[in-house]
Length: 514
Image (tube, rainbow, N blue to C red; front, side):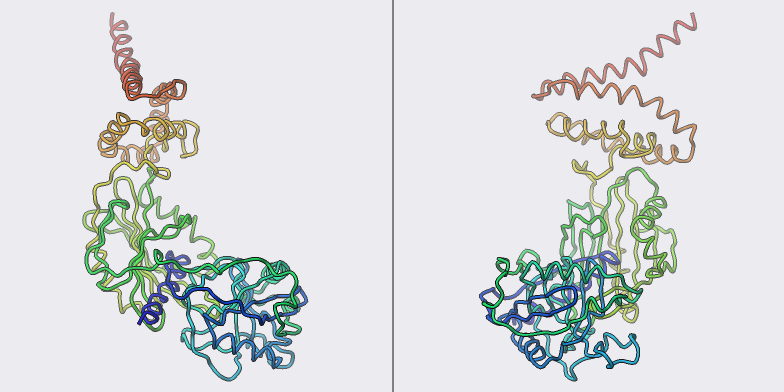
């Protein structure tokens, strides 16, 4: 039963790869490492040796199959026919041998004449891991395998890991092959550098330069997604939503800004599951249209230009009283064995200080199956209160950001540092900013939009707020080590600005009238 549950969780991983590509990601788990297998496999290539240690405790049948094929010369003169730098190199196809093919278009379609059952396990697909390639059928592996060039944990639980590289030369050889120039179909132009001249089974004692790698990294319990039966709600992200009942849900922590914060994946035991994900981004004062355009330029443009993604439609609408833009996109996701046609529908929703990208992804063939469930979930999307976020990535200074063009402008950066490093470190400062934030966001997005629409208005705002920003520099030149000092300096700055903006102009106006 535990294996069945782990296998079900495994389908989470592949869909999350789709969403990284189309904006998503997740994980799974299994046994304990207690294996030091004496047999190693060495693949001799023109680029160097690839020495592979094997994991028979995790994948006994796969290891036995790999050794049998190696000992019978099956891999001799085969080519690493699919090379994707930063992802993996794939080989083991008998059709890549000299005289075995009519056209290189046949490369990647060969097998030993039989299939072996999957032995999915919890070893992560980190750099140097060796795993079996397969089609969409989990039990379709035969002889083809791939070696991970850079950590690709979105594959975890979806492919049978059975070994890893264990010498420094092996990793150098991997880099040489993975960086070969390729055709648009990922076939290396100088494929001879990726040809396996000979494969052999040797004893561990025959290899003197084995690295001390320790246990392979495995998926942890904390990475296992959970199912939910009722509404998902997060004060941290500021929203609530009802995902389809029984779907696996996981909050994702990843530094990649294009990966969503929350993902829900269909509990499916065959084929590619559908998913619903939500990504939360802080506003920097731009309009909804500007944010969508900025996102496309930053994360989608290259894929759109190359034809990998095609935006079918885009329309502005309203979701529970919030402005939103609905997009439908067609694309394809690269797996270790094939490209899968993907379709997704995404709602970008604007709130006073955040944008929410609620996305539904599925294969084109099954897109309609769960579309209504996505629509039902989208209709339940509700904002919670949006408290001031100490760690906002670019939000909070909307008017100044618009006036000075960029969040990186010196004036804006100084304002943010004063806010985050000084005021937010004291109770008085926090109380003031939490109260001020509610008031500020009632009008700042509108002012910021006006600034972008009118250069004259923007220049007027810039001139007007410059004295205010300059006065705040006082905080950077005084020693604030108590609540009392914050209060004293804060009140002093308030009275100073009242004097600059109200008292002084009133006095000058009075003198002029006289």
